[in-house]
Length: 261
Image (cartoon, rainbow, N blue to C red; front, side, top):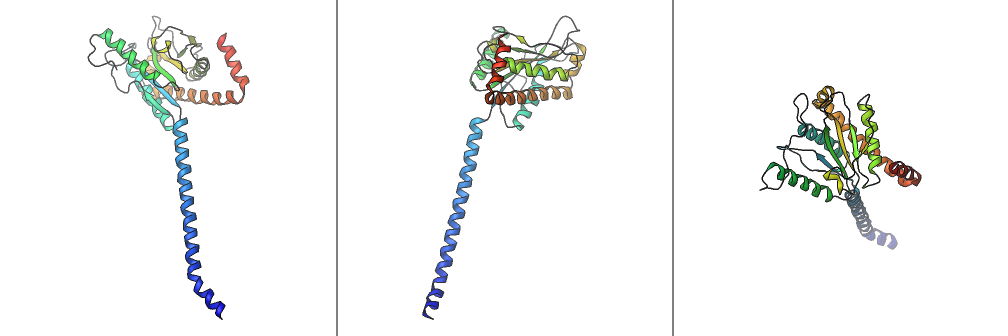
């Protein structure tokens, strides 16, 4: 009887101890979960790919004027905004050189020529501020003969990945634009923004504003969204191939051989 009484007296203590242990275990579990989530968020922030998007021209610099009167600067900006929205939704960090119809020259700079120089210098500074990014500059083409049409990719040899990125984009644009059999084109030392760009970089001329059909298409918000999705798909494919080439070095070696030819 004495032992039973002692046990009864210890029951409240046992219950209290059990509750304390349970609460402590739950607290530790919550803390571990919070720490894991924080670590995952930190890792995601560190590893999230940055894409720098450049909508060519802007402000007083309209770029090309299409046969239907549309301004290149507006087409470029619309495509870049749609592309940026897709990339942001997919989890990329997006940096824009401009998000409005403006030149990004320094304040106080006078004269159209000086403003253009300042604008280009500031764009290059943005690009160089993100050395681990992929740089995409969106433009439209123009030629004296209206029969020329279709997108074309321009790249430099500053980065060995440029050819692969250009090839992927050109193939996807060929699907969007039936009959487009253009090849990627090398522009070493040809364009200011690309001379010193060491990260993967690509100039995308989405079509010819001198061609009536291209001009009509690129004046359509629906078609511009298709162009944006094509570029987005190309970036996704590029990053997918990059992962596979790291897992299988022979893929990367093959690309290097093609790039050097």
